[in-house]
Length: 226
Image (cartoon, rainbow, N blue to C red; front, side, top):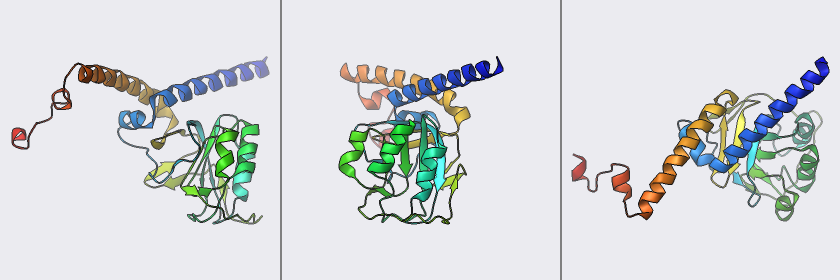
């Protein structure tokens, strides 16, 4: 009975996580970023490398040596269904750390995507495979797989001015990538829904002839602000 209760509990947690991810994806990174107090945005250089795919889920972090992707292979199998890999491979960008093979492996594992502070390759296949990939760009150069290369899975890492922790929530779309501590997600989602509802009213007012200056109480001229 304990085993059954454990399975039921895990299923419930997975269901709630999936609901959060779905709602976050409809709201978008820009809305969540504003609602969170303008925190959690990863560097703007990291963007979508697959077309039309939104990434949302729980973070599994991974680091590794420059121009080496063995730790990424390991991370694919350390992660679980619905997880998102966030990788910092030695601050070296002239290598394709991820491609068709790893995307196919990630799809088979049920991963929700990957974010790499570096480049990837196999551009023409990645969107077709269907695993969202975010990174700095594309690079044809291959990587090594040194068995003794220094790296880690599920340790805190820094991307830009953001500390990314294992278990954080992550969202990526056409505007970029955002991470949040998991215990803030529900509050930020609630604030985001309210923000979106307000923006709907603003759009209706604009369509009816109002101006942004009026709606946001902005001075029409510099002198009017004095």
